[in-house]
Length: 432
Ligand code: AMP
Image (cartoon, rainbow, N blue to C red):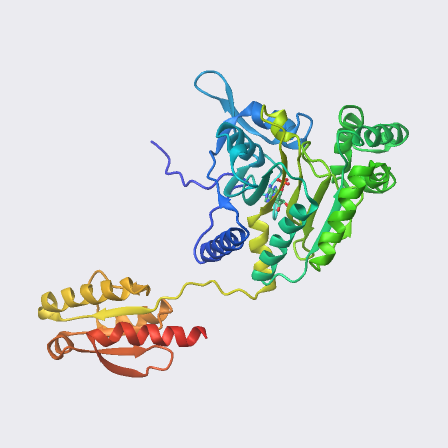
């Protein structure tokens, strides 16, 4: 009686299919290469953690913690949560494994899915992907902040994304931020009635979070609220000025965004965002900032830290929009084998040659069953193969094979030893 039911991916999550997955792989390996050239090493983290880890670090009154986490009961009745971001996990691991004894700065990067129960729309998913990096240690030198940003600028250039804006701010430290928050609270007292319900609540509980509000009607009110840099203490002001110097010497353009506080509670001093004009409403490509003191909050030694997370889904969209990266994988050789009654002699040769070509790093399709030559060549064409290698009874007997270039049907006879070398040399010639 069971009705035949077709399953679909649940709302807000999606499949990344070929050929898109090739661009994803290209982007991930490009990111790894760039980050590793700056001395970052990969950390692989668990997908779920104790709920309390996120609540304590991200902040109970943030949207992420109060509304968006996928939490469930673990076996021992403790609450666990699918990670909505990874900085908290990196710090947890840094403390757990005593990484503070590492020489110099500890520079880590991660790649993987994050989970937030947000309202799905273009560029906003419930399972989305981030690549992030963190620098942890005893120094908060502005050159660290600037080099982290430089690394992102290099990545954008590698992706041929030319249009982007770096928004920069400082949100102060434990000494000066309370004064700003007080000023904000006072200013909000007079205007909060004009704002959305969430902001009215946050005006009391966590006024900084009002600045993250994305409700369009609230924006004119937010634009009139006190601006953070006006309240910075001397030390924070000097740190910010030095960061600006550092960015200038690296020739990185930026725009100061005096109300950019970012949606997570743990930030202090530097905050930044990189936006793209081609992405529509969800235009933030990267978000990051400094979080000195977060390690102490999570039970570790006093540690300085800064990091970023970029949204892979959005980066891929921006790369596609720019249209200058070709990450498509091509089929190099389709093996058209046939032998009729003699196929028992032909097929082993085809298997052997396929393995040889693949061993040389070429992409090869070997049909599992014999096909008529015309059908083989037709399929090779549809699959976008560069070459068809024809292996029949006569070719096996003569030890010479016909390699046909499908673009122009040009054909040449090659021995088994010559095939690999020829296809490789042609492929390399095309790349240069
Ligand atoms: P955050 O962890 O909120 O600072 O976000 C860092 C970056 O992750 C953002 O700039 C986006 O590019 C990306 N991101 C955050 N939330 C989502 C989401 N729900 N869907 C897709 N990308 C996201």
